[in-house]
Image (cartoon, rainbow, N blue to C red; front, side, top):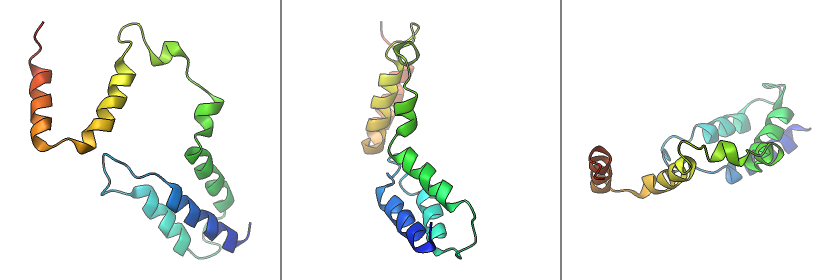
Amino acid sequence: MSRQQTIQHYARLLTRWPTDRLRPEHPHFQQLLRKRLQAAPSSHANEAREVNAAYLLIDNAFAKQYPLSENVMKPTSAPTHYTDLERELDEAPDRTWWDGVVKRVKGLVRLR
């Protein structure tokens, strides 16, 4: 792969890579891609492999190739654990300070 093609792939990856909703102020992978764009042509020998690995991650190829079974995703001890965790991670970035305090207090006080 030529250096120009590699630069184009890194630029495309930079536009397609998702931002971290929990920590948007820390774009670590995006910074790495920018450094690769500005690097000297022979500074990294495995650029083609890195680009290929990043595309596989973006396309979720490993999750498609090795899907998790229902037993793993819904353990008998806590069947809703992973769905609750996913919901919590989706809600966390939009939560206000007060919502966080209320959520914490609700976690401490459980009425049955």
